Image 1 (cartoon, rainbow, N blue to C red):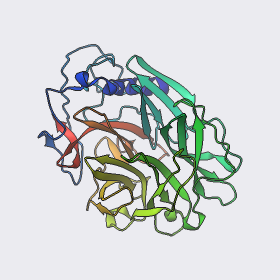
Image 2: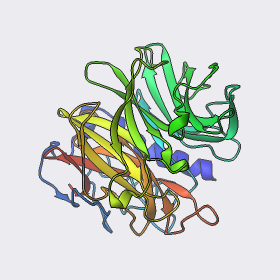
Image 3: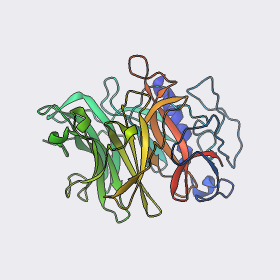
Length: 376
């Protein structure tokens, strides 16, 4: 049942990759005025209205039976019904550290290891969705199972690259590796003899997030896992070779934990360039508490310097405690984009009784700043 519900949720999102004509929402542009939540601290409201140019009453499967949703079949309705409009999760099962890749109108969603699956993947297109299972069936010999975290996938000329965190057996630290596949669903193959990035002296390296700049150069954002052992946690940007399989230079520090609300952690970086501004989203504070939140900074370039917001950009609200692991899904040609993130559901924090569910929300860029949409 968990798999069916997530497939349905992703199928709802899949309409977001339709044509530009389908994407028109009453002629609204990216910079149009809108009612928004504060650009400093975003707390989703009780209701969110997404206007669609098409009206339909065809029902869709919703993982929250107490919160029915009506919408289309995923084939061009626009955005209505494709994200839960009241801040509740689109999938109640455990789906931590989500990453979503779009390929030819199909969404591929990846998450941290669950049960006996290293990197679970699910696809969804306008015609429906499918649970695809394991995308990384084998770990490299230098690694060990059970600690495969925060996957992300990048498209390259001849296929796809899966960046992920896994345990380095010799040092006992978490490190970053990369696997190769010809299909976004995998199987990905990691034939490496050592990690791609493994800063053992700084506590290990985790949370890889690829970024391609406007000039076509490839970069990898990652975190030095210093909070594992009483050291600072630092987010770096590092250039990659053109094929994405090796580093091509030294890392540059973007940010570190230096604000009170962050405590001893900054992690889960994600960068997007919008109109010449580099936006860095990151998570901070303790992941297993309601204080875990998403921060935002504006950087002058892919290597900084970066200016942080003074307060969290997204923090706990009624339906999601400790939101984090946020990634932006850029919907080219549309007036709004999407963010995906996880959160502890209904205030039930911790794995003893809770789980980190998958959330999707629309955002708009207003005067160069990201804001959650309240009303369009």
